[in-house]
Length: 110
Length: 123
Image (cartoon, rainbow over all chains, first blue to last red; front, top):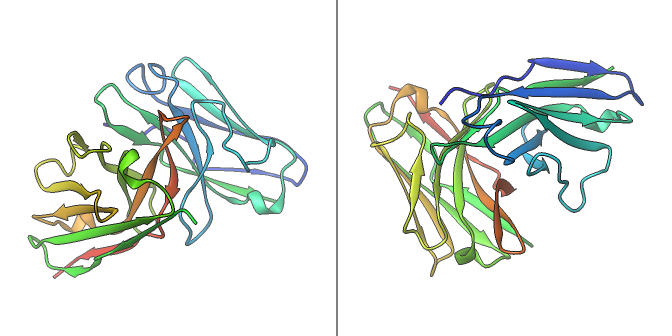
């Protein structure tokens, strides 16, 4: 199972919006609405930010939103804040009854 | 407080074995799927294995199939990962993670993570 494809890095200024893409195949991202997104600060455990493509867990800011079109899912962060600087990972359930993560995207807040 | 605490990591020689444990507290452990996810130093997250709530069903990544075994003891609220025939490429922080549910329905995401335990495979 190959990792989902994410850009290695994205950046934005405070207050701006950024979007991180996550591209898979019809056997994972395109085949299921089971895409989730995780935020990971250095040395910390990942934190669930989005589940089932576009749903936010309780306590996650509404500045975080998710979407999907075909085999590509996207995470958008609006109103960038310094605390958003972290690594972001997408994940999808697959047709093999396994899960696959993306390679991760480093978000830099300029 | 909902919590997962991993233990059992350490330094092991190639070809050796190690058993990781993950102690759960603050929730009804026996009601949730559980997963192991690993992260090599400076690298991304990689899903390793899943076990269903009663331990009757398991899944593995191809990279560990036949070498790793996931199991659980619901009476002890503990998840395990038995790792055999370890290789240098298994070196990573190993996280246990809870399979998320909404109103009891599995949503195929990971909502609670432990702090991780480091496994180093080296001679």
